[in-house]
Image (cartoon, rainbow, N blue to C red):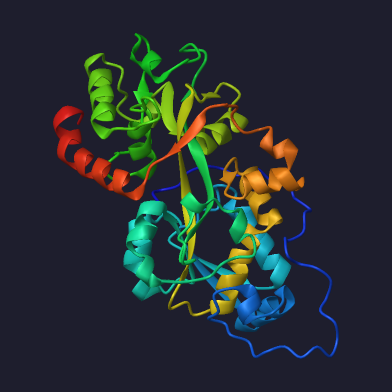
Length: 353
């Protein structure tokens, strides 16, 4: 995860948490609570018992969750109000690497991480399978339950239509009159890295050398802006560009081509979580129908989106606001990400900066 700078919408959803049913029958004998359990059923038997255990802990500590990033402000407030649990928010603009580096000192209960960082640091996480586990695509979760995607997006082109025509492809950005930027240095900022990889897609395959060469050509044509603020075109996640378009009627979003680069942020529980029941309740909330629709309100694509669509619990009005595309998403594997990052570390400064 990198510095996060999107703004969330503010419409209150009324869907209930998936898995929350009627109150448990009276006089039922339940096994002892296990706040370190790997599932709600195994450790708490019911959502009511999990919520009660979390309320007794009284707090949840999160890290790297800006309130204006994929609607996290409303998500945090809704969770806190729903369960009476104080949410402590640490270093909202921290990167995924910083989350991990700070874990021993700051002791967050939960993490929100880029997939490659989560895969590399999975030994720090406690296994936990949320009730919606089966709805999360296999390629977006660790089979042991150590991490699992919560939300994601597609790489897009945001542009000012008063300055440039609607792009039909990334190659259009090489035409005269375009001033193009990434949301940061691709060697440091995840969204910028994925922007480089997105422009490199050919036949459903992304290659770092093609992406670096594209931006080398942009620079040579005089089309590479020094900063995003100076640009008329921004290659960024669709949830960033869509949020900007919602606030600025002079901004548009396009997802060109028949293939699009997609990526997801994943959730994980700290093995040393000071509030283990609250951490598990937080995950259940995020992956409930209600929590997933709250991500959707922040223009992110919920990990359980297909399942919600099939069951009729997806907020269709919110889904209709996502940038339109029929492109097939391409998700980079961890080895592909590692190789591409290594290439950019070697070649970006020499060819582009």
